[in-house]
Image 1 (cartoon, rainbow, N blue to C red):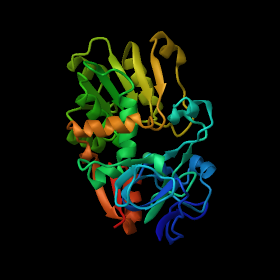
Image 2 (cartoon, protein in one colour; image 1 turned 45 degrees about the horizontal axis):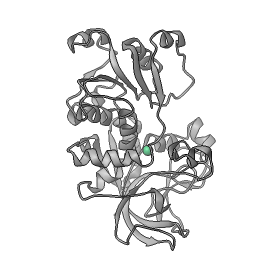
Image 3 (tube, rainbow, N blue to C red; image 1 turned 180 degrees about the vertical axis):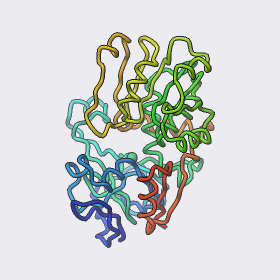
Length: 341
Ligand SMILES: [Zn+2]
């Protein structure tokens, strides 16, 4: 089969012929139809410090996907040939304290698809049946391929009560943009998203009725005043990984406000801890999705009319993967789909 492979320790990926995966008794084989490129895949493409420490080439990469079940192991339950599915990309163990307590997303023995084991940028992928999520008809193939990052946005955004609350999102990447739409859909009063990239801010505007601000050009205090905020934002979602953005968020929060951190800084950052303590902020770090409550909520919100599909800006055949990665590296795209049919 064809697959996008990190062949050796260097920048880029190669389209190669590799063996079709063999399934274990608790796994299914999926014929991949659509995949999406994640920030993680960009790190792997660019072969940065994190990627070169984590990935063991040769490795088929990719973890955001949907497809069709075409082979079922002997011990698989609840799935049939032909099912349209996506899957949770974190494959958890069963013996750690958290796994045994049912907190699967906090299992330290987690294995990541397309990072620690061969992934989904391929014609076929194998995965344990417990990770599979069946797709309802209301979710089309492209949306099915981005349920994984949509889940990150759901997990972060629904971490706190948002009804009637004012929300600040720093970073208008795809997850920040989806988070804004989620916050407004579930009843936040005002939502402001910030980014220094104007194209990303206008993409955010096409996905939801979010307020936008470019902090390199506009003053956030003036913006807060014009939005009717008196004391600060109730909820902050940090999705940029930028030191400056995090600092601005802390300054703009209500005392005792709630902050979720999802953006990954590319290096160690300076943080004025005393400012954070004197604001008495609650900080929650977001990693992955809650299995499988996040998936349930995400599909339910789509069912209730939430539509974030405009965050998908480009769609390519997988043979055009180089063009897709280039667009993303230039910061000129939202979510980018690679089709495998
Ligand atoms: Zn991802």
